[in-house]
Length: 221
Image (cartoon, rainbow, N blue to C red; front, side, top):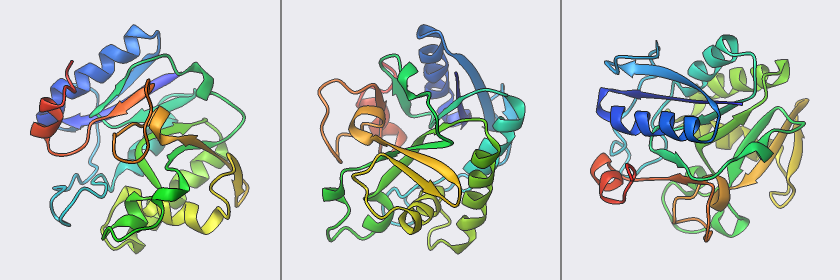
């Protein structure tokens, strides 16, 4: 298993913490330089200001392109995490017989009056599990192509659109979408943000908000 992430210079401290987490649990690490990071493979992902749409809705439209690069760079199971994610416990159990793993929210968060609920209510694209299979590569290519049809030019909106078209029952863990095996993992355990489901002992914690918010909430601790 290899943990991969990317960042620009502004997020270098957070990037380094992800690298430390990977090492602490015995996982290999792969890094990507989104701009003046000073290490890792350089790649342009088009990072957007998260305030452009009034709230955070996913701001790395080039994320699928980075993942396609990683699938070429590393012939192994990959765990992608945003740089503002911390791994708190071993996650060996996420390796399995599927192509793409996504952290999804409970169905009670799929409805409401939030403006971008159709993007944020279903899943969070800050953690993605990827088996290095041809089907996984096909899915990531489709994900990249879907971004052009989104309202926010968002990696998360594009991923949500694909899954909403292919998943009929979000209570079921395993799905097949156009021949791709997709597995859903509970966000409170594997992508805990504190706002869409509770977990007393999450394995992966995702610090949301501005960089200042993340630092105040202890992302570097």
